[in-house]
Length: 91
Image (cartoon, rainbow, N blue to C red; front, side, top):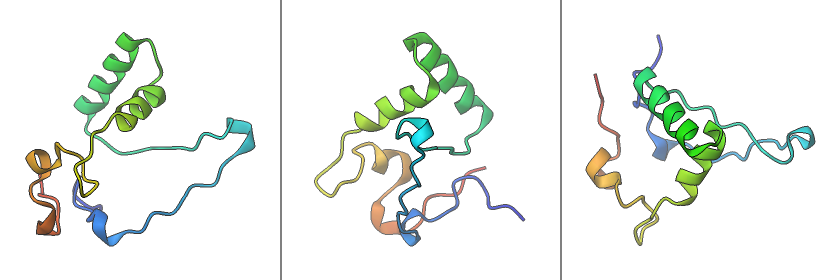
């Protein structure tokens, strides 16, 4: 059975850098699963900006503002307090 969307606890995982492929000019794959309406919005926003979805997502991530603990400043509003240990379940 598949996990519900957003149920994986990010704190239990350790970062593993992806393998770089010389044929891809040093780029690596980022392939998150999102609801269809989020995908549609990302596509439309990238198209309006005149860039690929990859370049659009990279720009968003690079511009993300972090608080003093390194957490995105908008995370409390979206996901709750970081000390709760688990993201809220949706849907």
